[in-house]
Image 1 (cartoon, rainbow, N blue to C red):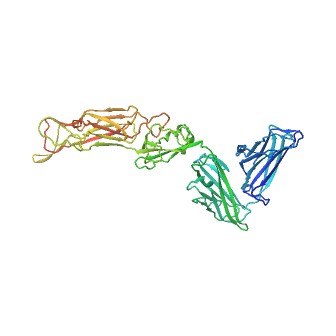
Image 2: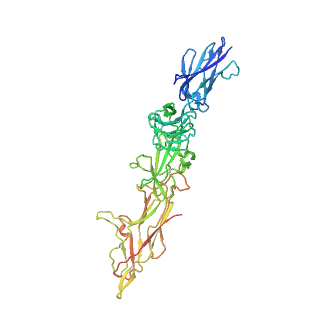
Amino acid sequence: MVVPEAAENYKNKTTSDQKNHVQDNITIEMKAHNLGYSSEWKDINVTSKIPDELDIDPSTIKVTLNNGDQVAIDASKYNQTTRMLTVRLLKNLSENEWSSISFDAKINGKASGKTINSSMVAKTEGGTGSFDTATASTKIPVEVEPVEIEKKVLNETEKETTYQKATVGHVNDVLDYQVKLTVSSNGADMSNGVLADDLAKEGLELVPGSVKLTYSDKTVETPADVKQINLKKMTPGQNVVLTYKAKVKEGVVIGTVLKNIVLYSGEQANQGVMNGQADASVTIEKTKNSDVHFSYIDRETGQQIANEVVATGPINAKISALKATDISDGQDPNKIRPAYIEGYTPVDFTTATDLNAAVYADIKDVDPVIEEKSVTYTFRYEKTRLAITALPSKLNFGKFDDTQSERTFYLPAQIEKPADEKTPYGIEISDYWGIKGWTLSVAQEQQFHGSATIDLKEQVVELSGAQLQFNNATLSTHTEDNKSVSNLQDKVVTKSNFNLVPGAEPLELVEYERKGQYLNQDGDNKGGVSYDIPGYSVHKYQFGDARTADYSIGLHVPETTERYRTEYTSTLKWHLTVAP
């Protein structure tokens, strides 16, 4: 018959004065023994709920067999959330055989002045009777600590909200550390206190401006670093909390445990210099999540025009598959690539880190796949504007022939040098607005007129019946890199030939309507959508080409028109109207 027996004991590995102190390292051993004659205790599970006053090191769990052999046990046998240790013994126990489980733990600040009660249960799996279960316990008295120090950590990148002794992290994760130092109410005043943190021996990089000291009397300080922080004098019962953020450096090897240690030193009346330390651990794992950054800048100045947006999600996932909770400030993932920014229109983007040497791409359906390494998408914007320019703004038909005959005077083409190609006259429209459509029209405000001396008096004279004639008009549309604006067929209606009537209503010459997609305040960028280059267009409505430019703009004057030796002028008013 099986006769189960259990025993539990501990050994202090830090001190030899037969006393236990906060921050001491101890080894706890839990034994199972079969006292039964000619019997076998089978399928034994050993369980123990680790007291809150102990911080177990799961990597030290091992089983010692009856013959003295030791076998390491996987750290997962300890549940950090429930604090429950559950280990299946590796062998059944025959008559008078022993097997034990041991692990290392550190006494934390909660144990100051208390007795830690640790207990175990050795039990046949599924068993319920007294012949398959044994229990044991041990008491660990702890001295009152003049100063208690405790350190914890949470992974801010993983959106953890609770500080704990240990967590997991990844390269480039931001960790939030908390150190709490308390002067025991049974102690004495503390002076010349110093906290020093090693930042896991260069495995971490301090986030600038994140260090904060908060005393229990509400005093707040913001040291620049954590390598050495001088504390103000504190009385019994007072405490101070140090918080700071650190980023896991590039190059930290997967599997590394960053055991971040903080040291304390301070003087107390009648006790001299007191020292202490606390640590928090972060196990570096292979990245499961990563992020994509979206930056928005002015193309002309390079200045940021909106806050950077960060999207965080599983590697290989598309941004469009994320939720608003995965985006900084809870934004819609379909409205950030690019974003609607009042007063601006997006023109292109790049993923290069050196923006000065970057090659920028047209904005299509920008839906990045999250990669292991963080990537920044920089969108460039132009200020909203729709500009119109006459090329040139003044037209001169040359010297006037006052012969009384019907004639058309043609405007000579522009040419800078004799060998240069002739340049037609025209109107240029620069669209940095991203509008859906526009119309171009023109009006001649009044007939050509001038000033002449008639009967010894200076009088206003008109070139009555004269009419401006425009021929060979065409519209060309280009982006600044000479690519077509859209693969889609835009709607374009133009007049290739027209005459102007002085004083008449504006004559519509060009109607332009885009067929592509456009971002606006209410729109979004859903998967599969192809975008034009919104507003990144230059349209030129010109009269003739290099061959016909000399004969594309004419001024027709009837034979009956009375002519005077004077300069005749008129004004053309061009209208650019945004379609509703």
